[in-house]
Image: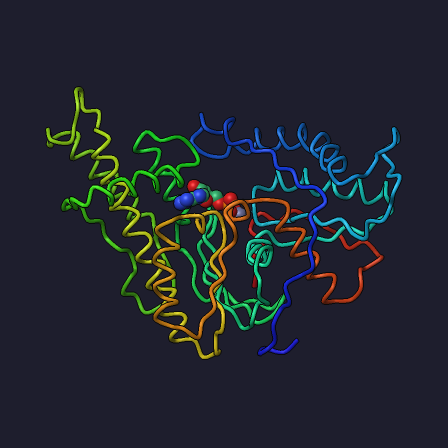
Length: 353
Ligand code: KG4
Ligand code: ZN
């Protein structure tokens, strides 16, 4: 495919789809705890596979063979992510590949996020596209020239934006993952319409490059909470416990700042790129954020030639379907599946470009 091509919406029919969240187990640690994640993956994958195959109408015999063996390929993500957890998935997939005599193909987790938008899209993905990938581990602007041809043109220098949401949530006493909770609080503050004077810095908003930084913003939030605990009786309850109104205002001021930087850099990337960008993709867990999608649609109103793709909510945060979709495009584009199993290794920092 050339640079002015497009990726057709794949013809997908979901036979079975299951997801097991470990969020409640990680809540107490305020984030994902690697060893626990690994153990839980090992425990959950076999019953999850059973359940998915059952949903899809397959029957697994006692020696783990399929009665209807019409599967072409098994897809698994090899990174980026937590290596111990990635290895569990890879080893599981390789074992199945051996048992069922099927090739296993690796898929980049971020590639999965990009193509998650094709699931319920009515249109083909017109290329080249700009992808704003926002998750708990990543904040990057990626030029998507074709499937497999990506260039990172901007990225965070410290925390990812989802990580900043999670950390601010923790400061406000909200449990992991904090993104959706901070967002809900921020919306409540906006609904009150009485906008107070809390305003946080917009890190790197005027820098010439397309990079981001969120760790200073997080620290600014921390100082504001500490200061209010000490000095502001309007906001604080007994014994320095901050009130819900204060939490909501903090959440709104933080979200305003974080999203404004994402929007400004994305707008600039669209306007300044030498490629004729036709599509904007916003994907990754934070793409479920209401304020982000509201502000992103304003950019698209300003630039009517740009088509916007955002995944449906259930495909915004990590899921297996997006890995399957990316694998489907990968195999149909190369028109062949490598029969000689390539070596698959977990790569915690696997880059997309
Ligand atoms: O892509 P994802 O599921 O996992 C990673 O690859 O990291 O993204 C998870 C991140 C978490 O930091 C979570 O707090 C954030 O996405 N998130 C949100 C929202 N929903 C999930 N952040 C802000 N607003 C949301 N509505
Ligand atoms: Zn993700």
